[in-house]
Every structure is written in structure tokens, then in C-alpha cells.
Image (cartoon, rainbow, N blue to C red; front, side, top):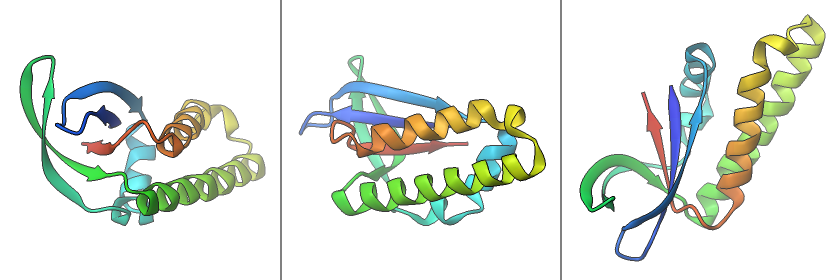
Length: 118
């Protein structure tokens, strides 16, 4: 299960993408959380490598960026606390790295859309 960020021009030509891969269990937890409600997915047309694609993506407005970033930071703190309490940090290391990186790039004004894959 993945999340992809798109950096686009004003004409929705894709300039850059970032792909974040999460375990199926972790992605399910995100999907069942507030994360899935932050931002409205709309069918967006992009031009990527001279090919037109359509994906249900969330426009990363300033409000959506802030909301997603705050959620991910809080979620990371809760997960870390749970891992320390239950001695399961190794089990969630890759997901924690991914969520930290995702939060960083969401804050970065370069990326304009978020696509939840899966």
C-alpha cells in the first residue's frame, strides 16, 4: 500500500513524484484513521512522461498540508509510545521512517497533490 506525492506545474505537468511504501497492516490503520478524511480526493488529470493519467488525488492546500502534517506528527508520537511500551519498535521501523519522510515532504511546498494508492 502506497502514497504518492506529485509536484506539478500550473498546467498539471508532473515535475517530480515521491512514492512512500507502507506495510499493508500500517496502511489499513491509516485508512481507518482520521488520515483518510483529511482532504477530499478528486479525479485529477496529469501529464507524466508525455502520457495523460487520471488519479483520485488530494490538492495540498496550506490547510490540508497543516492538517495532514499535524496528524502524522501526532500519529508518529502515539506509535512510538506504543512501540516503547510493547517492545515492538523493530516491527514498525520502516513504517516510522516512511511516515516521517511523508510528513517532511507534505510540509514542503513543492508537492501539490497526494494520491492514496490501494
